[in-house]
Every structure is written in C-alpha cells, then in structure tokens.
Amino acid sequence: MIDIEGVKTTLLEQVANSESPRDVLKASELRSLYAHIGQLEPQERSAFGKKVNEVKVALEAAVDERVAQLETATVIPLDITAPWAPNTEAPSLLPTQYGTKHPLMKELEKVVDIFTRMGFEAIESRQIDDDYHMFGTLNFPEDHPARDGYDTFRTEEGFIPPAHTSTMQHRILKDGKKKLESGGQIAAVSYGRVFRNEDVDATHEHTFYQCEGVFVSKTATLGDMLGTLRSFFETYYGQKLRIKTQPAYFPFTEPGLEFAIEKPATIGGKPGEWLEMLGCGMIHPNVLEEAGIDPTQYQGFAWGGGIERLVMLKYGIEDLRHFESARLAFLRKFTS
Ligand code: DAH
Image (tube, rainbow, N blue to C red; front, side, top):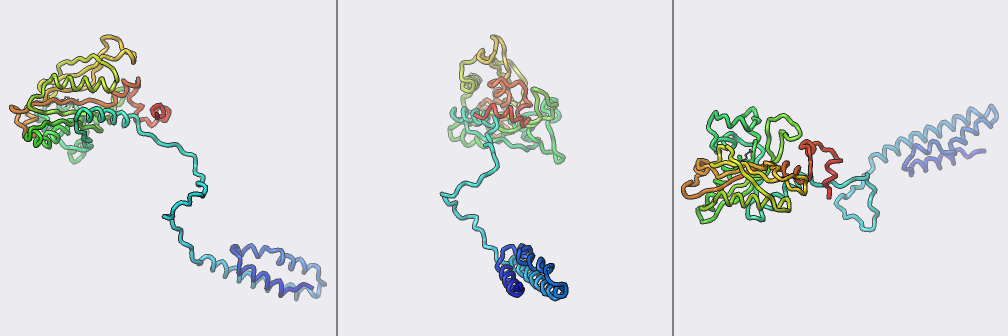
C-alpha cells in the first residue's frame, strides 16, 4: 500500500524549498499516485482517487504560495560600480569594429596644425550667424548683387547658416584690436562648416568645410600673404609648388586675388595645369574700420578656401559626394 501521506509531505517540502515550484507538480511521485489508481480494486478506487486529488489540491495551493513568495523576495542589489575582477574572463560581446576619424576631420586637423605652427591662433567658426556678420561687416552694400553669389540659406527668423568662414573676420579683428594696440599683431585661422543653397554634383555640396586666415599688423603686405600661403601649400602637399594669382573681386578685399597652384606631377599634373585653391587679398579698409581698427595705421591680409578641394587633390578623389556618402568602402581607405 502506498504511503499517500508520506508522499504528500515530501512533495510539500519540495515545493517550499524549490526555486521553480511548478516543476514539482510534474514530479514522478505524484504521477505514480495517479498510476496506482488503475491498479486498485474497483471498490477502492474512488476513496484513493479522492485522497490523491486532495494531495493535488494541497500541492497546487502550496505552489501558488511559493510562487508569490519568490516574486516578492528581496532582490540583491547589483553594484554596477564594483571593480571588474581582474581574473574574470571578459564577457563575450557582439563582434565590433573600431570607428575612425572622418577623412575630412583628419585633414582639417593637419591644415589647422600647419597654421598653428606658423603662429596662427585657431578658432572654430560658427554654424549659425546673422546678416551683419555674413555681409554687413564685410563691406557688402545693402542689396548689392555680390550678395547673390553666396547662395545663402536663411532661417525664418532671418539667421544665416554661414556661406563662408569670412563671417568670423569681424570677430577676429575686434577681439584682436587690443593685441595691435599693445604692439602685437593679429594672426588667426577660423575653420568649420559652411552652407550654400546649391545643387549637389561632383564638385558642389550644400555643406562643406572652409578655413579662413586673417593677419593684421603695421606692415603686413601682399608679399607676406603669398609667402604664407605658399608655405602652407608646400607643407600640406610635402613638396615645392609653383603658385599663381589673378585679380578677383570680393567686397571685403582691396585688392582681391584668386590663388592657384600648379598641379604637382606626382599626382598626375601636367605643366601649366593650374588649380584655383582659394580667394584672398588685402583686407578692405572699411572692414578694418568697422572693427574699430584704424586703416591708416594697420593693414592686413585674409584668405579663405575649401577643405574638400585640398583633400581631393591630395588623394585623387574625383567626387565630392563621397565624403558625406557614409560609404564604408570609401571611408575605410583612410583608416590608417
Ligand atoms: N569668403 C570667400 C569665399 O568663400 C573667400 C575669401 C576671399 C576669403 C577673399 C577671404 C578673402 O578672407 O580675403 O568665396
């Protein structure tokens, strides 16, 4: 004869100590009680069956109680600040690849580095500005057609995402005034993103990077400017270069020039193949005056040019759109 009370006690004990009490309901002891019913004489079955059922009901109640108890049990807090045990194996993470700096940022850093080593202070340019800094401080008369050449975006409030880094000139000049008055000079570059409302193609993007340079002293000359620019380009491309200028019009320069270099033979250039790299010139007296600098005492030069063009020439990149394409095959060429 099966000790039905004994089985009940054992199973109840198991439930009380189990971490997964429902499993006890599937325990073989309970199954064997059911199996036993079939082996009994017909007249004994009903009484035994009733008892088995009582065991089952008691067990189910105990299971419910244990489940509730487990759910409300105090959770041991996990100390996420605890130091990593040095001998513990590192958790296996999903395979990953290290990101790298974007090629444009890497090259921009090289450009800025060359100028800082030449004694220029480096300032990041703003990404939102106003009409006064975009045009007013730069001697663009109101309603002058030269304004149209810059394809500027405007916010509803009239702010301007700058179309050139020259928007920083006035700030550089105003801040540098004290340096001039104490016998020093202004030497700064400003670099950053600029925006133009242009149709995108292989050589035009609505968003690109420029670097602007400003130098002011009592004696600055156009010759100093050409020397500075030549020295920059020769350092960046790591070789001697031929340079050329031609007159250009910018309201904020007098005179204004376009500056070109001869495409080096090392990157497939032929003699006489000139590449226009930037705009430059002597700072217009009105621009100095607007910043409170007396143009009869001080003179300066400034330049501004695109970063993408520099980089494309250096690496033989044929399409400007690659830079913002997020194409890994392109970006991975610059991971070293
Ligand atoms: N801001 C001009 C452009 O984006 C380039 C430029 C020309 C900058 C002459 C200057 C300058 O500082 O003096 O086309």
